[in-house]
Image: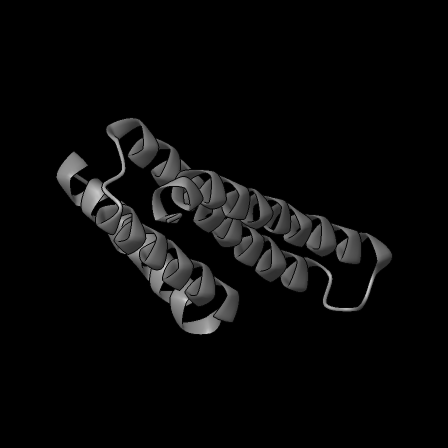
Length: 119
């Protein structure tokens, strides 16, 4: 298999995963919508390049953790179809990581936007 074909397959699988998360995970859609809204507000308030970098990393971090959470939940469901305390811990801790990142994104958004929106 050529490198070109391998890269093409990798992108196919990545976009397939993104599509799955977007269509099957309401929280991923919510985080995507909130990130999109933050980008629009950032454009309207004319963020500096450094602020754009911070906003981009923050949005990406939340979405990446949500994708990992979705993947981990699917894997746990396969490995442990019956309820198991360790499976619950894995799912709960993964969800907590998303919650921490989402909370941090609210803090970052507040720091970036409130001074620019205040009258």
